[in-house]
Image 1 (cartoon, rainbow, N blue to C red):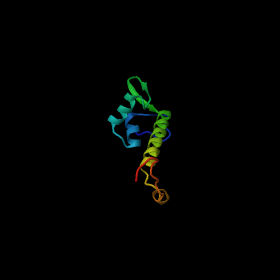
Image 2 (cartoon, helix red, strand yellow):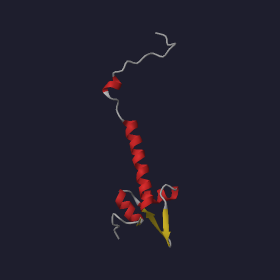
Image 3 (spheres, rainbow, N blue to C red):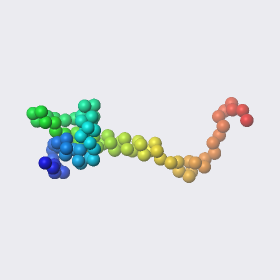
Image 4 (cartoon, rainbow, N blue to C red):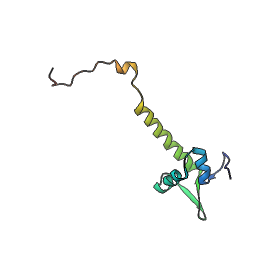
Length: 89
């Protein structure tokens, strides 16, 4: 069953398809507490609020990765570096 974009809860497979990840990855997120689920009987469901929190965390992680991997700008790479004080020439 495919979830519509305005669903309140998603099955594991719906969430997996929406985010392009494996079932194992989703269950790993659930088991680590990074993705909150509710249960209908024994069936886990991911709420839209939990999905939003997950997406926010992924966006922050991506921003940190891109900032860390960013190449220096020409102005940064041409700045003169000074020797530390006390260094011998």
